[in-house]
Image 1: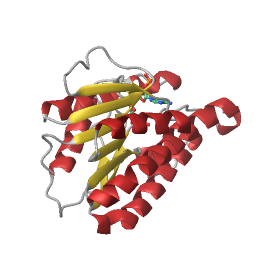
Image 2 (image 1 turned 135 degrees about the horizontal axis):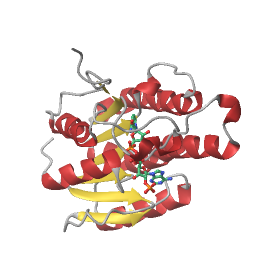
Image 3 (image 1 turned 45 degrees about the horizontal axis):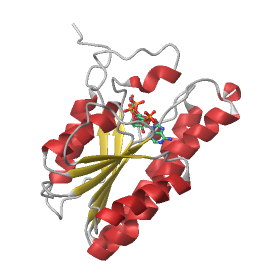
Image 4 (image 1 turned 30 degrees about the vertical axis):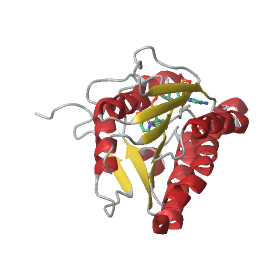
Length: 233
Ligand SMILES: NC(=O)c1ccc[n+]([C@@H]2O[C@H](COP(=O)([O-])OP(=O)(O)OC[C@H]3O[C@@H](n4cnc5c(N)ncnc54)[C@H](OP(=O)(O)O)[C@@H]3O)[C@@H](O)[C@H]2O)c1
């Protein structure tokens, strides 16, 4: 897809992976709508618009997309990035932590996909990127609740891909390993470090997937740091 002039919606642009992707898509000439609870003052661009949205709230998501479709006939790219993780033993997980993860990581993705699918099917064109995690590919101790939400993202993405491919809509599920962002603020004992993936590199991989020819579909993108503990001697 030639990115210049395309309309992209990204959830969670205040920091981390979503911020980097928004910046790179703006550089490529996209018009970017950032949906989130907070904006980032560094995202100032004539083609960027922030719409305050809590993806956990269906009414908030509906309002955001109504605003976008009031300005644009078509949305070409949706990136479901907003997400968070609480790590720890399952029996210590609170109802609030479980609900926040399931509502953000899974419900929010469902609400946003549902808003763009009718338009993408009509225009017979679109690319949805869902950010899962390597925690969607393997069980991990003390990550059970987060893993559950991301396995659900994998299931939704793989099924949706088969539902919409004949409408020329791509669905890519991204499985990043540990990435140096603010994500680990809720995970005592894990400090972001320089041997993690860099959010700008992940954003570049997604831009490249978006730029591939129409009949080339990156279904899954598993990305890990090559040497997560640093160079070996
Ligand atoms: N970092 C990693 O190691 C890693 C690895 C694999 C997958 N991931 C996934 O990558 C995605 C991005 O994470 P990140 O590493 O960039 O973390 P981050 O720096 O904490 O950024 C998360 C983004 O999600 C937004 N967000 C959270 N809850 C939201 C809500 N209810 N409504 C709207 N926006 C919301 C946050 O915005 P505000 O809090 O400002 O509202 C923020 O912009 C997540 O889905 C995460 O699960 C991360």
